[in-house]
Image (cartoon, rainbow, N blue to C red):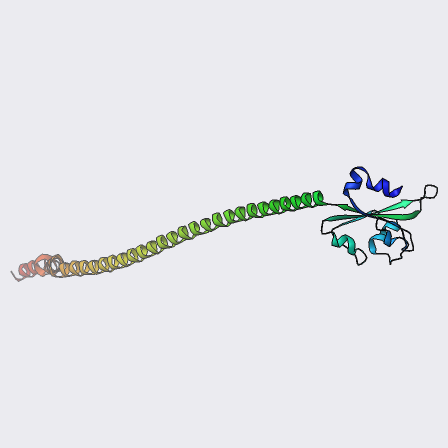
Length: 222
């Protein structure tokens, strides 16, 4: 009856293998009759299923799954715990091997979409970072050029100030020399010209003729 149920309808077309496990690792039922009654060591997925968890893995086979591996088709392996209705305890675990060609195609498409999204995001981030770096580089170059121009202008101003300072110093020296020559000329003019006349006039005014002493003596003599 179980064989007929598992072999009918959509389930029969998609089900590649089926096993019913007891907690001690004994195969209670299997689509492959040679496995019925045999005992195997529980793998990790079976142990988790007996603890109440539904486990699944894709296209991965254990040592006792040679027949499924030899099928050469992608299989989805599902471990489903079967509970006792009156206690809820796990009494057995069903192990399904489902043909997973559609699942593999869906998984490949999802992986491709994920890689495309990651690649697109990475490329976008790279382009944005490249644009930021390029703008920053241009800004730095512009600032460097502006700084060089300012330094050049400052050097030009320093050169002009130095030239102006030298010109002022030369003009000051010329003005000092001209002033000294002018003062010497004025001194010479005063010494040789009006000063001598004033001194001569003063000497003449001090003579007896201008002071009246000479006339007195003359009158006394007379």
